Amino acid sequence: MLCFHTIEETRNAIKLARQEGKKIALVPTMGNLHSGHIKLIETARKHADFVVASVFVNPIQFGPNEDFDAYPRTLEQDSKKLSEQGAALLFAPSAAEMYPNGQQDQIRVGTPVIANALCGADRPDHFGGVTTVVSKLFNIVQPDVAVFGEKDYQQLAIIRQMTNDLCFPIEIVPMPTIREPSGLALSSRNGNLRPTDVEIAPLLHQNLNTYKNKIITGQRNFVELEKEATQILESHGFKVDYFSICDQRSLNRASAHQRELVILVAAKLGTVRLIDNIAFSV
Image 1 (tube, rainbow, N blue to C red):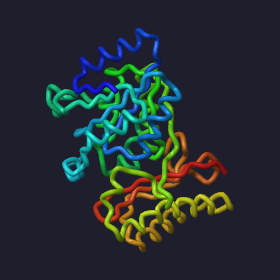
Image 2 (cartoon, helix red, strand yellow):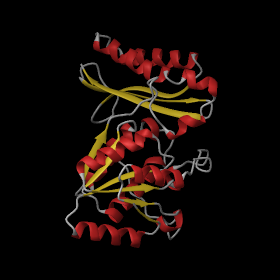
Image 3 (cartoon, rainbow, N blue to C red):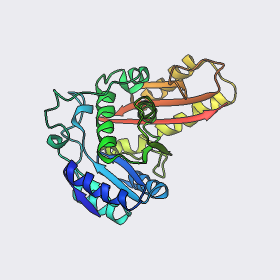
Image 4 (cartoon, rainbow, N blue to C red):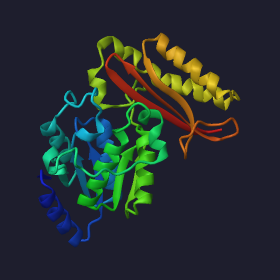
């Protein structure tokens, strides 16, 4: 596996692969790879001949009181895992390489209305940081295909819209959420859970399934269901940011007549922020 830290080297290697007629896939990550990331690589290999994985902890998508400094950096282990899974190239730039004029002077990619709710409500700069870095990676790698996990449902929706609105000739391939045996969605942050919280954390997914079933069996007062679910989670020690029943496409709060739904939740256990979702039709 090739490993580069500069844009120029990365572009040159991808240019050679393209000249050989290879289809290019991109898997953007922030590193500290787990089996969910490995599934992203496996999915990318099914869609392309030359898989590029990026490892970059993007500073401009973290807020001032978030865990940027504490976010695990495990590049050596990540590189080994990517090589074992058949990635062709690892792009692991520094912040100075990605933002040579400094983060404050970096031109940002704007975000759609759907970025203002859910995770964007209390993190106003987060998705602007995501769209900016992803658009830069798209321009650096110029992939035919890019693979993103459905666990970050709102992020996936925003990236899909950005890809369409900015006319990137890239197919966005979603990958279903990978879970621990307990049902907890895999996340790089799960390793920061306290031992007591590891036992509580799976209740997040269990709660999603409970309220999915309530809706399927005919309960349609979504405001009351959201309130009830939030109270249950908080009674078990979660600090809930949101528990929202939304329309799958717009991510607006769903009305009783809508049929393509997604329930999204974000909650903290201790200092660890967990997100999850479940999409379904009724």
